Length: 344
Ligand SMILES: NC(=O)c1ccc[n+]([C@@H]2O[C@H](COP(=O)([O-])OP(=O)(O)OC[C@H]3O[C@@H](n4cnc5c(N)ncnc54)[C@H](O)[C@@H]3O)[C@@H](O)[C@H]2O)c1
Image 1 (cartoon, rainbow, N blue to C red):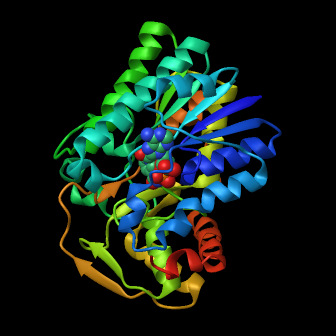
Image 2 (cartoon, rainbow, N blue to C red):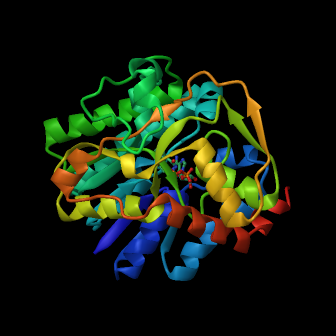
Image 3 (cartoon, rainbow, N blue to C red):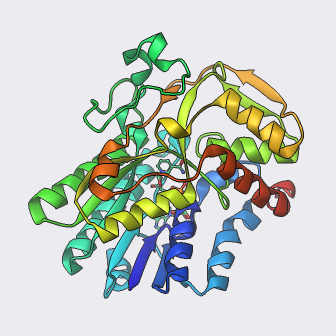
């Protein structure tokens, strides 16, 4: 088996590469190593940038420094592959607002190219969409009672209206790419899926303030830096551990039923920001310092995925509970504090 992983040196991409390599597959990590958002995290940018590259190279992954906007290189990389996992993206809302053209070419043109090569060689492909395509009006659409944290919060399913409320260029580019996924399924019968991913977390995630909040909180707690919460800290989100996301990609490979799927932690893996902070304090053995900031426009303060469709159609469901996943994440950060400490 041969697998092409676009964005292979990113957080999720690196876990996909690791999984398939350890399963005996030939793996290509295709990444242009931009990682612009890293520069905003305040971490040791250069060390963080090359960390996943060196990790994957050490495992024996075939490393290819290339851009998904370059159709010729992408075509060469995809030739002979059995599966494409498309994780490469411009993932940050702030960058999309500042550079909408860059966001558009990366997320829309890049995804269009990936779908085109999947069609050309008849390769099943998964695109990483996001639950942000639902928009943030969900905050107002659910009652106070529904969004209060309970053991069984209300889940949002794939039939829910999308792009409701305030949208940014990132919402538009991720949704446009998802529409192309549907278009390639319906027009060209490409075996494609769009996974609407919820908040993901796990080792090798360099979470910043607008992408990867669990890792951001965990890094700050380990380093003894204050955590800034925008809003009340009572926000509730479902979260999903890295290996569970990889299992969802593989479930699609084994049973490629095309379509759009919510891939999230669901109600079992819902956590309020306060609960996450409390868990981090207990694991690290030090109370995190928390600062409260003004709620940010565009942020979702309540979101829990309904994941019945993925369970039914793909036979997938998450396995790793937040307690275990956060502990693994913290261990990785504690073993690698130099990636965060020596700011350059
Ligand atoms: N992390 C999350 O919580 C989350 C949630 C929802 C959706 N997603 C989506 O999942 C995907 C992966 O997210 P992640 O957290 O692993 O992101 P990441 O930023 O860690 O990884 C993305 C990788 O893509 C690479 N890349 C960017 N532009 C490229 C280009 N033009 N050509 C080739 N490579 C390019 C980057 O260098 C980076 O290594 C993204 O599509 C993101 O929008 C992530």
